Length: 145
Image (tube, rainbow, N blue to C red; front, top):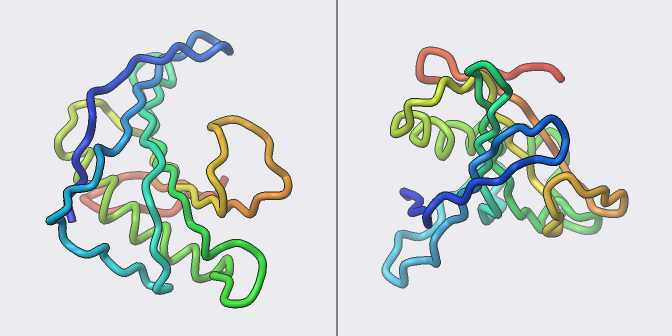
């Protein structure tokens, strides 16, 4: 499944004046392929992709997904399963985005959230998982925070 994107919008962060480019997926194509199953079996929806300039050249790519199956309760996707899903999402979505962009990306951050939360907002009651990867040799290499 290839993602289609609407036009990028420039965003200036309040702290440090960093520049980020925000991409949102375009509305789904009614004839699009079925969602690709993640290792846990859960289905997620991309909320947004953020390209963040870290100053002096390196960029971070953040991919934020809505993942209701990580919410507390029966049938919850646990942290171990979510870790496998985030690596799969990095490989499936982030790596193709890097191929079509010339920015020097130093880190890819993939996040799953049980509910939509505004980027940077605190939401202690909402289950969220985050993992960071370094793009290297066409793969996503896990990086400890």
